Image (cartoon, rainbow, N blue to C red; front, side, top):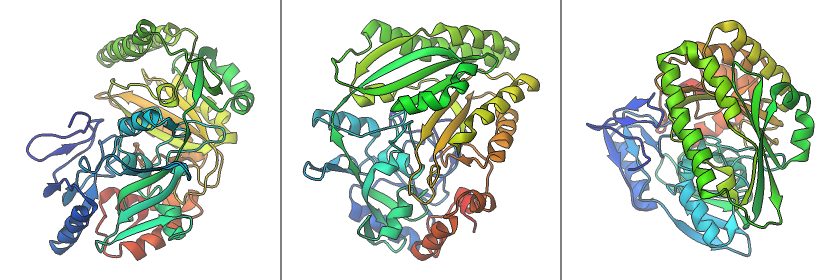
Length: 439
């Protein structure tokens, strides 16, 4: 399992290394029928069931001491419908395989996140997103879903068929059933031109509304202990293709973003006092560059430096205030933060528990190098983010519970009522879902 996090003696571990579980048994079904049979058998044996993808969540959302379903045999494209412009894929298909297969067919998703190691069902079930003015999360591009519910039956849903299930199950947290196939909207392959350039934080915040309005996809990274950011704008382009050159690509993406960055993290972990100086150097190491390529090569980048992450969606209008508070907290705190803070946006969508449900959102993501104590930083950041009614990413570190979610998600009760109907005996329950959805 190359990218799947797993361990010895039946212990499962996630990618970030901060979650471990020892399931009673692990099952790798090769068909929907086998998966449904595994669910029925677990129920007869009185065991809980969870499906796990590549373990890219930093929460214990997929952990179980019952039956762990591994989806690596449920992969590949089922159908491409060029009339409807949709593609139906098996749930265990990694995003990188889907992207490459679509490109070969001359097709693409409209938007995606910045990592593509995850399975399509793991990414969508936790609300994985990129950045976009009009185009939203990966789950918002879903046109239909197939899932195995607690009684072992196979349920399909779309805007027309079981629409109440469709509204919730696109970001279902693994609480409503086990997703077996997903139908995505696709479009003809297009080109994106990326423009990356450093910019002072004050200017980014002062001009944020304009930068957001003028670009289809705008994001930036702020380097704590400095007033520097690196901005990225992605816009559709008529071409020609001008990919990052192999040498430049290796230098920027492998050497600087993964190699030197990894060494900087090791130094920072060993000598925290050096972090502000490292931050000043690394925030100036990146120079402006422009390149044009097919979408997944522009949206995504390799992430080989392991980290732990917390990310919150705040109302887009509150971003400036939120970041200024975060900056002054870091400046005052004596914390040493060696990882940049990532900021992205998403338009409001209509998915029940989407972090952008019903409101235009800005995402603020804080990271710490794996193995560095992150609690003090995350706790202080979370205090600021929740004061702005932030909604945490379902697959990233947070301390919120059902009581909090009932307050920040107007449709929270709609989701829990559906769960009561589809999984009354809580076959898909685990500690994480008990906390975030209530018992």
